[in-house]
Image (cartoon, rainbow, N blue to C red; front, side):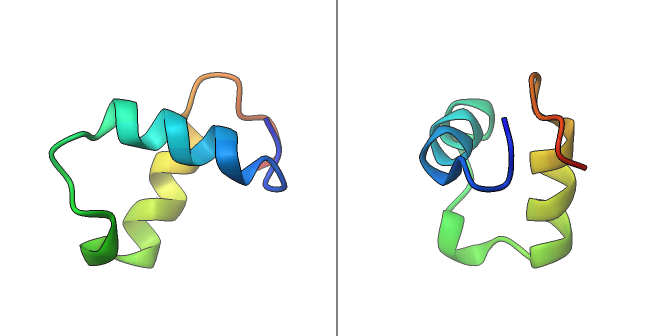
Length: 43
């Protein structure tokens, strides 16, 4: 996955963090969560 794969990233994040309201996530947390996704290789 790359940063341009926004739909795939959104799906993975919603499955990885289902308890989180996406409108309340700090950018730094979001950035770290994306970097930690399996298959993400656009760090």
